[in-house]
Length: 135
Image (tube, rainbow, N blue to C red; front, side, top):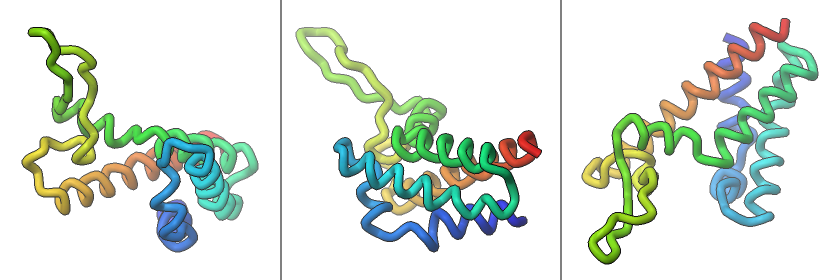
């Protein structure tokens, strides 16, 4: 229960709108915001784990948030791809995360909520594993 409360505190109470909006920007500013978020997110976990646990929680949170791991995972499991068509060939085929990994016809409000649920679940599972293994 403690790890759930700490996750909610770090991801929703501490994180302000500016950080939440800008942490995925592909810029140095975006990188700064993501690092800042991951540090402030992980620090409260000192209440239930040691420095190594906090460090691993910060690093894994950074990887998930910065590189949109959840969006790509959703697109992969839903088989949602985008590609450019050029001279009779498909080129540059990649996973399509434009609707959070869901097909374009899925309503945006539903896609974002399903994304949030899966993002939170992944963070909680990883945090649980770290806290359990570090003891």
